[in-house]
Amino acid sequence: MFPKAAAGYSYEDCRATADWLLAQTSLRPLVGIVCGSGLGGLAEALKDQVVFNYKDIPNFPHSTVNGHAGRLVFGTLKGKPCICMQGRFHLYEGYPVQKITLPMRIFKLLGVETVILTNAAGGLNQDYKVGDIMIIKDHINMPGFAGNNPLAGPNDERFGVRFPCMSDAYDRELQQLAQDVGAELGYSDFMREGVYCVLGGPSFETIAECRMLHKLGADAVGMSTVHEVIVARHCGMRVFAMSLITNQAVMDYDSEEKANHEEVLQTGEQRSKQLERLVSAMVTRIEHNTNYA
Ligand SMILES: O=P(O)(O)O[C@@H]1C[C@H](O)[C@@H](CO)O1
Image (cartoon, rainbow, N blue to C red; front, side, top):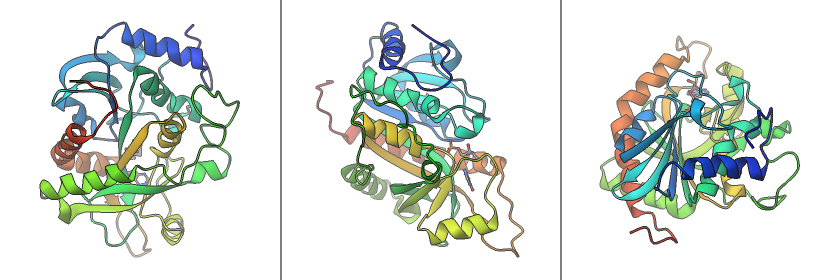
């Protein structure tokens, strides 16, 4: 029932993990939140928490990165039932792409309708500043170009279709909601909208790579999110994602700047309260099919 799978999990394996979780809590989440590097504080906003360490959840991978606590938190945000991943999984941790995206299928089977993903990213757009929040309007899936797509392999129609559309991956209504809520909170000066490019990591990019990515149309570069978005859309959940620009990508050979994880975590800490307010306010205003009142 709970195999030590090296790659993908079957529908039944995902169902078993979801049922295991459902048996331990009466909370039925409608919103799933994924916290990026240094942004785990988002989970603290949840009330009436029921918390699971990833290592105790059947089939779940384990977090290995500083800034990703490795806890799955059920709770409510202003009365709305949510589930929050305090820590995500990355390709560079050595997990197959099907494994790092497993939580999206678990979310779906738990009843989640909307997924909100956050990440830390390097700013390629020269107008961006450290601390800006970029609403992701589209992505470039670099590992996908080389065939590393989480949907590669046999397709189970119970999750979704063989060839899912991705031109509508990022829900436009939710992007507008984020803009509206951001404006109401007084965040407009540091809110942007742009294209996120995922690479495999863990090495940060060279100067030539950053220049190339910018020319290709990317505004920010990171090591996550896109795989989760593809799997979440494949199984029919609405998706909203945003990047915190934690550092400027180095684009100039005269620059003394060096990308580093400490700066990433530090910027996350500085903006965490504002991100928390933005996500909380959005969650209370997202409409769902289910009557959760
Ligand atoms: O999980 P995210 O995408 O927020 O984490 C980014 C990418 C690397 O894991 C790390 C680099 O500092 O932050």
